[in-house]
Image (tube, rainbow, N blue to C red):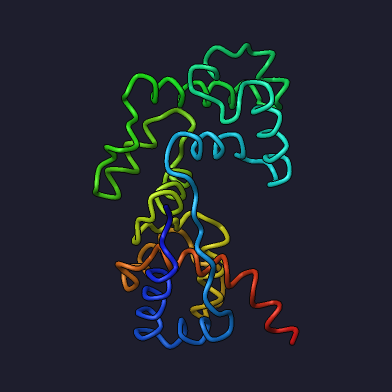
Length: 209
């Protein structure tokens, strides 16, 4: 469900009221559009398919996969698909193994999207227990699909770079440094992450005017 527009705006307003650098960035770039994904298995499967490839390549692979095993690809259909079928969709052997692992976790009930822990770190740990789901993927899922307001993907390169730009740092902060800095932005870190991606796209347009 993602963070809803009114909540996103309210969180950014709260951060801008605390920090003049964030206020200036918000004035430059404006409010971002919400980032909303469907809750559940399909969104995580798309994340696995799209790992380490371009957006265009991921879209092509997803189109081939759905054409071959069904749209959306049901967990059982994915498990039943042959290696050749998944290879024809563009999935490497590793991605095919990760996709099947996710499907098995869902079918067994070990991964229940309606019963993820309320604590963010516990939910991240639950998701990353699935083969092929790393911390970044888990954080992005919880932010975009569940709308958890304080998720902070500090390992994301664009978040690191743009946080440094917004805060006027001389260079890109490390993940550790960014996690330390972000304590001041609780409980609105999810909104700030979404804003960093928006600011990265929007400010060149602002500067060009």
